[in-house]
Length: 214
Image (cartoon, rainbow, N blue to C red; front, side):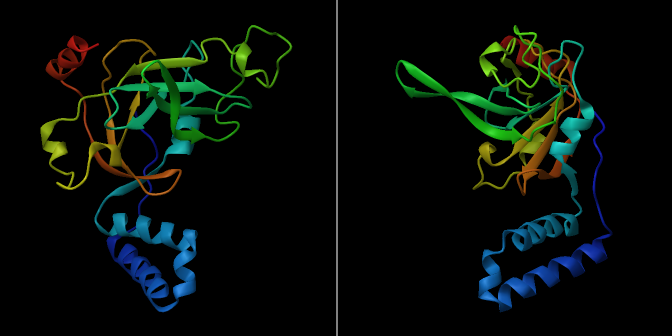
């Protein structure tokens, strides 16, 4: 997996972060401007030396596997399984199933991909050219296991932060019960922009640990 990493020199990031901070400090009306808050968050990560990934663009560029399923998976780090739901107009959502009642569960969307991120999903209806009838999409829900985070990278997470505050992005071999290989630990800053905190390859031992829990 080799997504494009966005960065600027630390000195420039310091300057841009300070500009955003001063504007938000001096003008209370500007504090509600989401774009300025997003910029401050991104420049703050850049000044710390972290690189930025546009995950929407990364998922789109990575494309699909031979079976038509997405090549990349994305899920909050506290979820053991990543579920992907295929939606209309070349869109889709990463998420997980949560229990609402003892006998009922629903799909919780963690990250929604925009229209035209993917191509036309395979359907049971040859005339459904836009996937407008989502019930006809073949294998609408697919899933795969979430990678193990090595302890040395867990130490990067502040004590008062749970794993649910972070995401894992990785390349999927197949949307089946197969341990992944090369994940990234990310912190979400905006709907599509994430800070890269760590990138590693799972060892044979770590993949075996995952396999034993599948």
